[in-house]
Length: 394
Image (cartoon, rainbow, N blue to C red; front, side, top):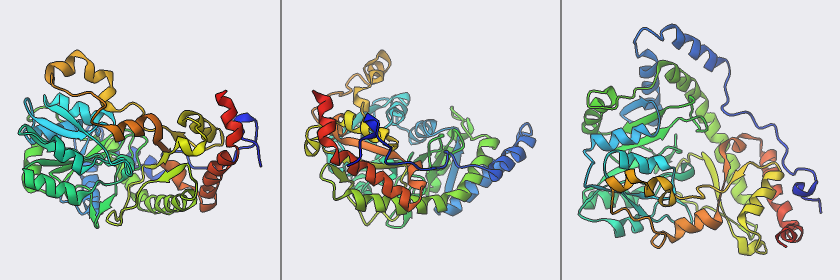
């Protein structure tokens, strides 16, 4: 049995994973091309990207915007969501999902996640609907679409706007339909770490002509905000979009292999499969860590040991949004004085945040199959050395 790298042994995972983002001649040429027209005031590159993404996603209306946070705010404003309204969303998400609701003057209402997917649970959402509810925002954590059969049905029955927070789910699909096909809108992030990136940017999608017309004034700045993506960033996205399909294929193959290799380990639970998800965004490889099945070794020590073996890993959203100091501050209290920040109705969220949640970054899924096997070897190595690791607790 080899010694853990944490205690001086050799790393189990050594791989020449490409730097992220992958870039080269296509991106350099795109930047040079856009730079020539930088001060012309045109929008050729942005429109070209929007058209290319419309073809890729088969979505009718595509708006390239400055980032994936302002996109949500503009969506909510265009739908007329504001003061006195409630928007149901998960706490297990990046703070931008919540802040966009507050910036519109509306009240975020937190519902719990499914413990086997970490995505918002439609049944828990149904329990939180009141006469003030106007919209629901399921967040596609890690790139996994929510149960869009359930959410579409629920929102149609209750007359609610369905907004897909697909920040991490570029390219994902459910029943063969792209994200953005189900709700009033979808929002995608193109921030530096994302699978389709230009450093900072975002995409708003809708298949509704009516919704697109309502969104346009906010996009242009005629009704406030105004956030079209720059020409340089748009040109970079066009180049990155060319790379995306092949990268998605590699991630899907390596993620499936990891599922297979890790499923036999007693202290790991891979996320529940759903055959209706025809394409997973795989911005992250999520898994659940079961402390009780690794001799009581806490998650932080396990993740430290795994990182020492060379596997880039994180605890995920270890501080869920309902615990964020932003929401207990004077601004949030002035806008949403009835905001519920308690843990009691979010047991799955708290379990994921405090003890079980973990994820591996998407760039590790771009290695070879053999390199992916070495990621699994690092998990096995820790399991075989659990007695030694447990001594660190004394």
